[in-house]
Picture: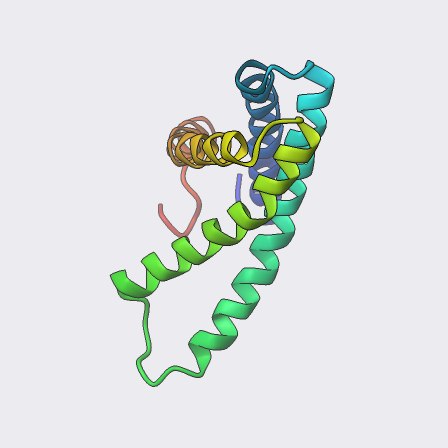
Amino acid sequence: MQGLKRKLVYVSLYELFAVALTSAGLTLLAGSSPGHAGIAAVASSAIALVWNLVYTHLFEAWEARQATRGRNLRRRVAHAVGFEGGLVVMLVPLFAWWLDISLWQALLLDVGLIVFFLVYTFVFNLAFDRLFGLPASAA
């Protein structure tokens, strides 16, 4: 499977499993009902998707104005930290309000989600590539 079909299947499965796992985690860690946690998971997924589009656009616009071209380790780290930092700023207040927990608890919850998604993304990509084969760009 290649091209747009591969990307649509990838994004759909990634988000489906992410929302299910995040809902379960929020239910357990925040003590919320599954429905309440599920809404928080869907909202955080939507926010992350929109933020990814906005942040990547802004980062690439900034990057285009730089004298040094390419993406060295420092620039990649800056991109990742900026993206995750923006998510923290948006999601911590949302989690605190929606899940009725303190800002500190919401911050700890969000840090846990960041660690979870690092592992989840790695494992999901490995499983997806084994199940559907490598994309043409990597084959």
